[in-house]
Image (cartoon, rainbow, N blue to C red; front, top):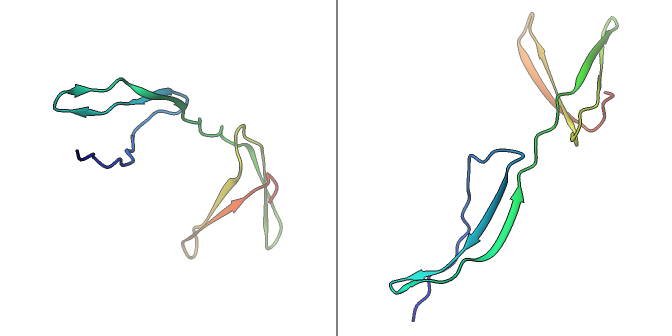
Length: 98
C-alpha cells in the first residue's frame, strides 16, 4: 500500500505572544488515525521601542545614543541625508552606543 510523503506546512499571519497547539493525524478512505504529536508553541513578541534618542553634533559628525529596549538583541539605525542629495543608510548595531 502506498503512503503519502510528508511535507512541511507553514502557517502564516499568526499573532505574537499567542500560543498555538499543533497536532497531526493520518487519513485514508476508511477513516482517520488518532490525533498525535501535540506540540505547543508561542510566537515571540517583538522588542519594545528604544527610548530617549539623543543626537550630539560636531562640525563634521553626529553621535547617537539611546536607551535599551526589552527583548532587543540588536538595533538598526537608519540615517537619511535629505539635502542637497537624498540617500539612506541602514546599519545593524549590537550596542546602544554607536
